[in-house]
Image (tube, rainbow, N blue to C red):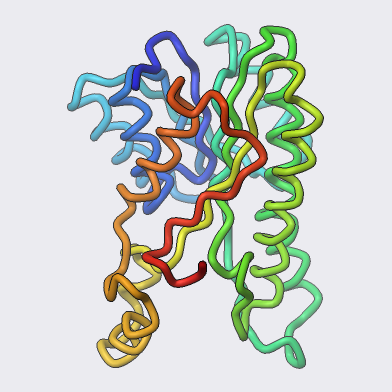
Length: 247
């Protein structure tokens, strides 16, 4: 799977799943733009990993939920790199809580970043993709978006919305040779799972047929497949990377 000459933008690329995706795409030859909003030092670490491995990457900070920032960022990327061939909408936040007590601000913040942000970035990237008649867009959803999860009505709704966004975009852009897919990770070893105590981790693993958490590289591998020529005939699909947690 070769991405030489392709320009990729990965939102939320400074750590966790986003970092793994950046590193994987760069290892395949893509010139990767690492997006962050609040942790420039973490983005620099991602860039360092890529450079040390012989890859190419730039850091670009912008808030995916702010239309003006998204437009300015993609204008700069296109001016500097000449194109956007691959977009991975990975940026996301959580504001967990039971619905009965959830504040409207917690709902709005999650929807704005996780769903609206993906819409804004895809809209900006697709303009240049349509002109070239080639593009790959991958939206990072979640097992919570396909199965639901108590205490995450905002997050689950946003991630489910991403799947609907994916299907509609796939139909709209297919005639321009742009594929749009989503990847729905289950429990992946990240900073978030590290916060769970051992008892909670074992309880969750007992509900996963493969009986273990996934690795960030597992998600990155799925994304790499979908944006490569090997995935050229796949669009409008959701690839579940969850160890069998949801079937």
